[in-house]
Image (cartoon, rainbow, N blue to C red):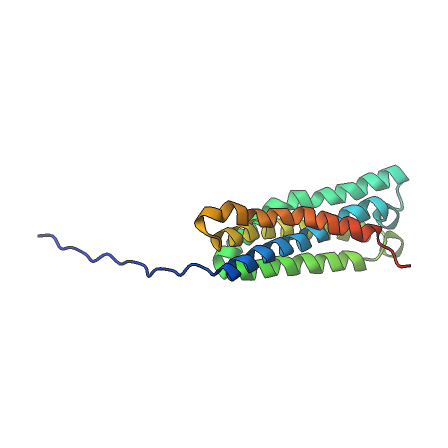
Length: 187
């Protein structure tokens, strides 16, 4: 004799309001713009300032190449950030994870700005610069996937691609902000 088991049905989930969808889309764009701003402001500094500050013991060409190599360190770190923050997103929630990624990026960028130069602390300066740049790469890697996922999860089913693209559109926004900041000077 067989028994039928009742099938449990999930309660219907209310669709997010248009206002909520718009705010998530804007937040994903703004968060990505800030994250990429921090990421690319480093590239500008790597070209203009860092060779003299952190690689002063090298000839100018080698100092510039080493400075750009530190820029590349973050690209190596990005996949590790995706794995780490992806796991955290599943564990502690996407919103908390995105806030943590933004804080990580902000703290590492601030520490790079406060980092003593080669003239002050010697070889420790470029080593700390590389480590902090690696942390920046982890933050960007963690932010990128999470913010796209958050935007698409809150979007209407037929518009998920569009809303997911807002996070990707944050990268050019960050580049424009970083380039604008590098051209700005006090009067």
